[in-house]
Image (cartoon, rainbow, N blue to C red):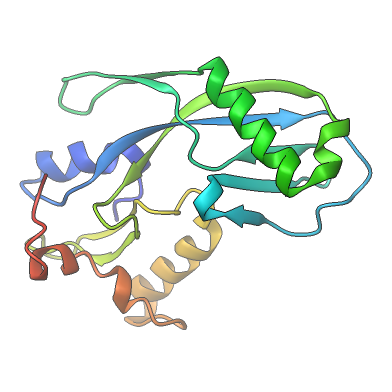
Length: 182
């Protein structure tokens, strides 16, 4: 089972498989605590926004805002994702526009991290083409959907099928569409 985020690409290459996964440097921020006002995950794809409120009251704000990536050429690659002030400010402005009460909060800290992405921005979830008994969960929104993806992958491995239709996330789709490794 490959569920190593940005390192899935180098791990696949080390195993002799080739799926188009690329590292993406992202920025996240956390605000001070507030009384509950965001009851569920807000994700606004066209404005690059995700907002969720933790039980502690802090908001986590992100949504594909970039950080600066330095990616090693070593076999399993090391990275350094550095935050960029314009991404933090832009992300917070969008959050305030979509959820106006965010304006009342201070950002406590921001950080950069690395996720992985696929050519169609949908996750890979299923057997790895060309690798016997190898399965992958990577790319797309697996960062946000981690618990759901983990449950589905466990079902696939333990039962041989999933409780939800995951055929759209079959890694073989990139081979069928001619989108082999980038």
